[in-house]
Length: 215
Image (cartoon, rainbow, N blue to C red; front, side, top):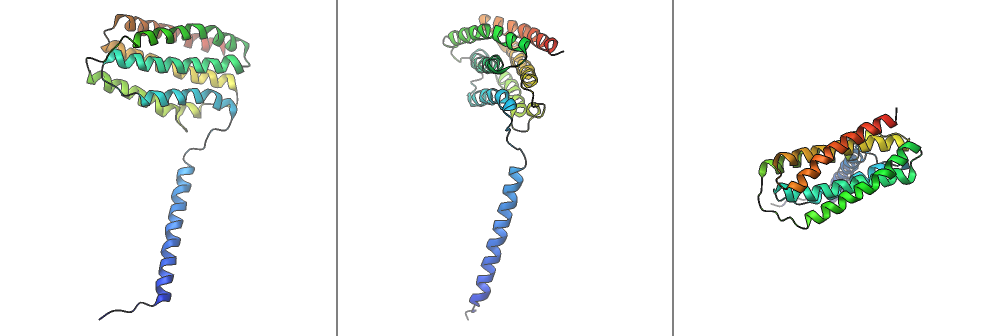
């Protein structure tokens, strides 16, 4: 025996169900939109954008597990991020001391990139090391969280361009030290190890100089 369904009741049920679904979708969309508002202050955008571009490139690298090969590529991307950030301060900085410091650092950073490029072309992945890969992945994940929308670095930014440069540069230099120190535990290439050792020393000196400049 077939049960007859009142067309009016069926239509009302469908409309009610559709309205509920739309309401749920709207609520979900609103929830996503309010979790992280996009940065609109140009004094923030100018310094955070190079870091997000750097992180995009870093996270797209496919690790082989070979410490020398992987770190060469990571260092190249990381150093390019530093160069892009320095150029922002050199072009737009208002603080004379910081602007001159950035301008003076650019040639050496570009030279580092050229050196890493030449070395990277000579390297081939050959000896995977899971411990290195896991440790370096953790460093990169921490960096990504820091520079993402609503991350710790963005939350420290203000409407002052020079202060924002200092904030981001200090974070970026510490990240470079972390990547280098992890590599030094596992790396074997003499040229790259010397680069990493020199980097940690220079980065610490740069951080000290920047902190003294803003006092």
